Length: 513
Ligand code: FE
Ligand code: CA
Image 1 (cartoon, rainbow, N blue to C red):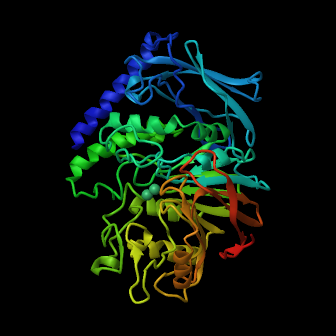
Image 2: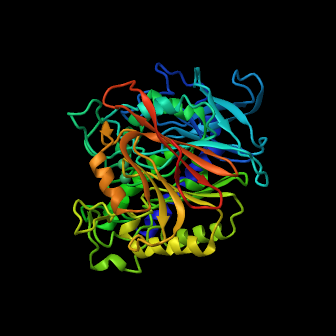
């Protein structure tokens, strides 16, 4: 897409928005649905101290284009102080437009800080489920406790048992999703659940795929429970893509068309603020979410602004370009935003919520040759060390990195330089496993012992499915790794596999259970 096409595209949207406003009366106010239009559930997200985003999408026929006529539809919403929806404190109407797949994003402000609310939508004679959302504590307050969970990588080919168990943790204030919310590939007949179509490429394909994922009852239950803070990894578009480059080496103009459709569909299906609405193939996803002065979440985007992987996207020993100082993971602007934010941060805990492992692990099978993942921060060595040097020198209060992507659990003390075994720790890193991706998994004891021996900063490895549940106080951060016995059949049991503590003032990770 060239710049002129962009402008035309934007102008087109602007015109549509005007029509929507001036002729809002033409939007269908009382549509009749022969089928439930709320098949994808509801969600809240991106909470602030005075509000949050409410989301839903009308889709009576979810995985075949949604099943709506191409007209705008009025959707009423209500916010209440009680679960029974009796004490309504806000209500209004939003237009679900066909341009955004009849999705609805309502941004609320002016609500009371640090409290729970309940919400629901109505379209014609159809009513949605009641979801829970909460505002964050006031910016200047230091709350005594934050409870949140993080998860990633939910390949639909297996069962969302981890979401089922997570949804039982009724005291969670937040749920952070670290990417691979969908996968782009075709069906896999050998697996217990199936994708709806071959590999997805067009906007319509991405919409149907996101809709398929969102029909899952356990994922919907998790969204009902608490506000989500989402960021993406690669599979929201394509495996291991970097910026405008896909893994097949397509022309960037071609790949950016695909990325534009993928980003738009992602926005349409997540509780994101309007600043995240994509413009062509560009989307503002990195942002900061504050839980008073207890925790600041720097939510990063490690895909959109990357340079190409200097050593390719596989694992191996450092190649010639390994130390290339031009390599970037965040892009210059995001990197500056992060450094600036961390320099002025006043929160007790500074959380980097992001996708790929920062620590750097030698995962070689033998003793003589090291092997690093070239798609993770370890493959962007100079960019990685810019960040760890910054953490070491600027010393923002208690940095903790939370990570997805690798479909396994790791707990680590991030070394200043992973090529130097005497490096000091600059942060704690908790890497959470997948919800499903990779299937049942296991303890992988042999592999575990090898990586533990090769990487002295590594404190824990486990290869099962699950999520990580965190309890954060001004004094300490506790991370509980919840693992699932299996996900190849529904309703499997969960265990607490391991628990770790980081005490305020020290980037060390201590095993407590
Ligand atoms: Fe994944
Ligand atoms: Ca990934």
